[in-house]
Image 1 (cartoon, rainbow, N blue to C red):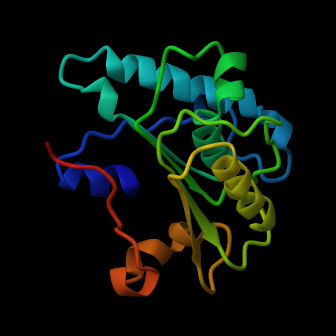
Image 2: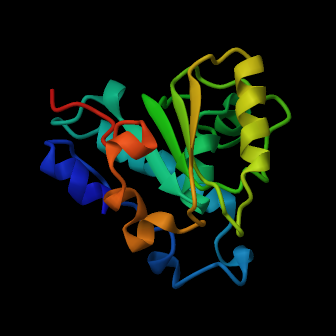
Amino acid sequence: YYGQILATHGIAALVVDSFAPRGVRRTVDDQSRVWPTQHYSDAVAAFRWLASQPWVDASRILVMGMSRGGEAALAMAVEGDRRRMLATDIRFAAHVAITPACSIQHQDARTTGAPVFFMLAELDDYTPIGKCIDYRERMRAAGNDNVRLAIYPGVYHTYELTGGIASMSAERIDIPLIIGAKE
């Protein structure tokens, strides 16, 4: 969905599937089927591939993910995770984490300084939002004043799978639906 929306606005989108190539359909009942570091590695590889394309401005690549993908988007902002993944050579322009668990937090919450946006579901019964709210505050306290969050009222973990964010008006959620620019 997001890839299609971005493309209609002239923004290239690379959709990374961390499950199917590994023979995994879902991880909801067994999170060990795909380890978080595999998602992180996929984000690193995607950045490096995009940055190598002549039609891409590497300084304008952002990472966006839902649930486990959201955790990867956050990890790519945190300096300790980037060092651990041997990915200090990459820097995403922004990080959008949709309903991440925030259960894996680096003790040192320093980030690259790039914008971080948490998109949280008020009624999330799979990845409760409290840890993400705390993580946001830790990131801000560690020096990144550009960490924002939105809590979408009355929705659960997979709200966008049923058209949740797509069907909400911009007035109701009070944030832009598209992140990026055509130029």
